[in-house]
Length: 262
Length: 339
Image (cartoon, rainbow over the protein chains, first blue to last red):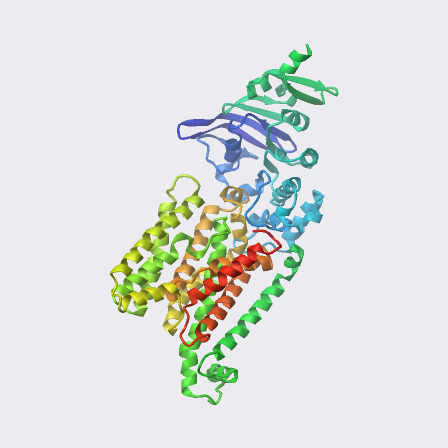
């Protein structure tokens, strides 16, 4: 039970955005993709979600190539959780979660009792059932992120792709959302997130994929990837990685602080 | 507020249906020549129950040949334009979208103006308007899909450009038209009116209208997912491109059928969906039927005003703008849910 990305390459015209990216994610794992802006994280996700066709390589879910799956089939295996956005029309939270069940339905049907039960179950699982009748646009950013996670769960996909789930949240919501996501991996979900925060990636991830210039710079356990050389190269600044609490936490700080201390 | 909407939308739909039926009956009785409700039901029941005629032949032919076709057409056109407006708003993720966004109205105007210029008579004017309307939208879709960048923005911009191009054609026809009879006929057509509706008009329009309205009703849940954009829709298992194409074709069909028989009736396709959004929420499951019923009801009432308020009829397009625009401003400046 795993998702395998093999030699994935993608180019827009002549510009190579992804160069032979490979990695593997197991169910129950939390994987973070680190890299500077414009490195191709979104393009990688789009290829994995079947939105873009890679020029080379493929993505396998449980040994099946995603390019052989229909949109509905794919959506039952892998779900996308965008950054909490501001949709044009204000839907109720329950309606948004119900939209995740659409792939289960016939073309001309709307969600019924069974889907409604699933949606409420998912909301309860995330402790946000009391939001169900609120308008999506009137709740906070952290709550929106949880609602979008609920939508993905209602989709019954086991692989969740998240685009910087914590980037627009305040300190408290960031911890709440990340803890919730970590909890999902313990239930057997496979979570793949992109993030700009190496400290957070270290704290929550089972594996880290560091991307540089469209290619894999480092791939492996957080202890191996969140280190001075990788992080400094990744972001083009001198970084010192400090270890705290028996290496349960690592903090990246600009290296000039070291100079000041000395 | 949303909770109330959730549970009561079926009740709202039932109330709207009853109101619409009542409005149809009252409208049939309304007019300079008196026909009572009792006579209306008698005439309608004649074939079914063999009621003994207690009405005059004039009443019967007036009702069956003029009033009922016109009432039916007002309801259908109101329903279609509102449903098309609501659909386009979803497909284009744009609350400002209206049925003429892809040039359906300006195309119909050119077709009608051309037919009037050539002196082709009323039936061919409708056919020309319908064909030109569809043709214009197909040109917009064909060109719009080739525009670089975001497809939705490309379509809207192409719609605006082609509309303006087509309108220049209409203006040119007005310039060379005979100012004695053709020019007033074109101008009157452009204002939009249901005056002089023939039973044939209803027969012509009803088929494309139904072909468009039924899929819009059936696909209404999926329309919700399109409002999140193509990529998100795709990750939820929806073939966004195909669904959007179907919805656009259906909305275009009903818009073209409506404007070809009624002329330009503005505002209704923008105002009614927003009114319905306030009433039942944004979920198309409730929104689509509510929009259809309210559109039918609104245009029927406005048409009643247009034919009974003064001795000469006021073109309905003028009235819908007169009522629609201030009402819309009231709607968006009122407290409550924001746009």
